[in-house]
Image 1: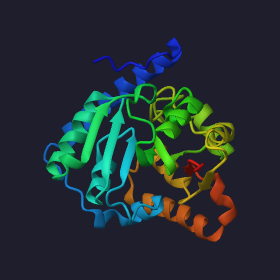
Image 2 (image 1 turned 90 degrees about the vertical axis):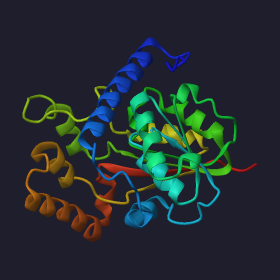
Image 3 (image 1 turned 135 degrees about the vertical axis):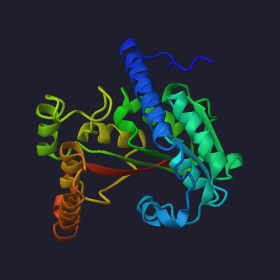
Image 4 (image 1 turned 120 degrees about the horizontal axis):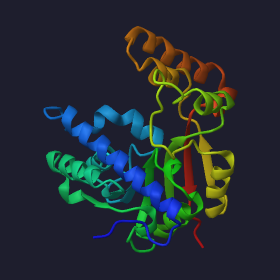
Length: 272
């Protein structure tokens, strides 16, 4: 089966191939590091995450599509919340991982995973009640085209929820563009072509959904990003302090939330 995107510029094809190679490697690393790990998922342990997404209840029988399923954590979690889950990823190794995690958690019948891209989804129009994705859209070469495919497979009145990187913070973007990856001490994390979503890209995506777009910042992410990127979370005490500062800023200074490195987008397909 040819899983290369169809009818896209060669530059986009190169991006997809680079992404596929990168995430195949990440999936192999994950398998090596978790040979004897605990692959089982208990929804009770992840209720705060589900609440952040608005997915902590009412999922029984819902048809959900996850875009970019990675290690299979989220589709399995949603299946354990009694949803019917479909998911795809560019990386064949990630799909193998997802299928194995679903099997180990006893939800193989509720998780259907396949290798695909936004350009060759293969799902019928208006197939899903909900489309979700985490750190997915900012890897794409054409966000408008992806938005059109997402809208197509959503039922009328359905929602698409994406948790993404945001380019709203000029200081973070300056550090990202001029410091990160410029020396061996502070390497770049992620793929060569990914970038935080700009204001224009968010507006483009919102326009696809007739501006039925809710933007929120469920957590403030700034000093914690520095800890992960630069300090590499080597010092637990410092990690606790820096992440604590992020939480304090979120609570005490609501106007600063929009400068978080994380953004939650909720897009609704209007009913006629």
